[in-house]
Amino acid sequence: MGRICNLLTLASVIIMSAACEGRGEFTSSPEYRLTFSADTVKFDTLFTSVTSATAVFMVYNSTSAGIRADVMMSGGDSSPFRLNVDGEGGSYMSGLEIEPGDSLFCFVTANLPDSGQPELFWARDSVAFILESGVVQYVQLDACGRNARFLHGMRIMSDTVFTPDYPYIIYDSLWVAGGVTLGLLPGTELYFHKGAGLVVEGTLIAEGTIEHPVLMRGDRIDRLFSDLPYDLLSEQWEGVRLCSGSFGNSFSFCDIHGGEFGIRADSSRDDRLKFSMVSSTVHNVAGNGIETTGARISVANSQLTNAGEHCVSITGGYAEFNYCTIASFPLWWLGESAVSLNNTSDGVSWPLFDAGFRNCIITGRQDEAITGMLMDSISGYPSGSVDCYSVSNSLVMTSDTLNPRFSNVVFERPGDERSGAANFRDRTVVDTYRSVFMLDSLSSARGISDTVSVRYWPEDLKGVPRPAHGADAGCFQFEPY
Image 1 (cartoon, rainbow, N blue to C red):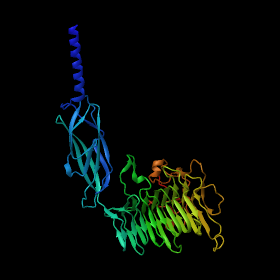
Image 2: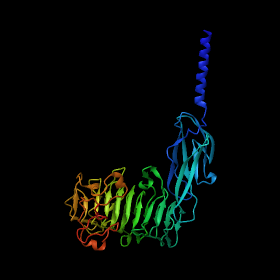
Image 3: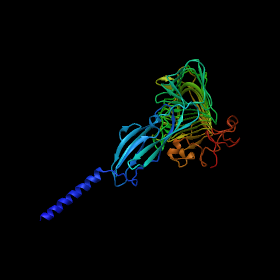
Image 4: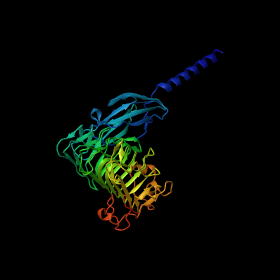
């Protein structure tokens, strides 16, 4: 009996010892190694001196033994990357212990120094995991950097020209004073911080080219999800506001997207041109894409798409649109009609003297692509002069097929299989959200353009020639694919 008791006691000691060994001992054998969720952590292009969003990678111990390691940035304290491992930050951490089957979170940010050059540059470093066995394992860190000019609440007080050599990062809005002209040369890029916008009391001349457009967008250049850059989201910045005293503004080959609104023209006199726009894009904004009150505007060869409210909202004045794709398919909400026409606002009368749409595509998710409230008469103006608009040689989503203001119009019926987004080459939601509005081969917009307008706009937004006869409506001429 005593011998049995001794054997049981010995067995208990062995079991307890084994259990303690499994929990507390760490291997120094080089056969045991860590694994990582990524061998390289890459950052999207970063502006210098702006700290990146945090990237995360995981460290796993998938072995049957504990592993102890020191962790260090290969570049030390001078590295442009910063590391935090399971809540401990620094360029060197010693004695980190990873139990069998356990894992660690590693967080990395980047803040790149100014390189002094306008060209893109690369910053690289690595995180070294130095195991107790002497084995060293690495996770590489890569980031592409751009130098930029940073403007904080800047007010342009004299005629100024922005150049394309460096992007401009704008905080607290950029103001153009009355009587002053701001010129944006081809290839100029304006990146606006959240809540910032471009406010023009004077005149803005934004003149890009087909090869080097002028860009206006938000300054978030990281990603909400791995497949969704912030650049594809609206409300990343405010928008472009043309104040009441601002006239003679020009947008040519401009890409304006991702704002709370696109271009908002405050109420003003309609006997002077408020702005002209040619071969440009206003896309993916939370409010109205183009919004005017009592103004005179001209827009041609342009894409006005995916507004949370209306792609085009005109209250009074004069407006002309030619070869424009005005299409409303915002990703995460139904949106409003593509076009809204009104001659009153908050009880104030704004006669709509003329709004013309020629060779346009006007469509969207709503059953009626053109809506609004137009009064037939306004005191002090001749009868019939205050609610004038026309649509010709265009494709329109509407059930109002007997409207006398329509001529040579191809009507889309709500619910038709070939209507709405089916006009465009890439009909999935994500592709549409990425501004893909080239025509599908079966689009009803093909071949319906008038022959006179082609003389003035012989090429589409991408530079594709339009035929003299049978050109397509919208800003894109169909291309075989």
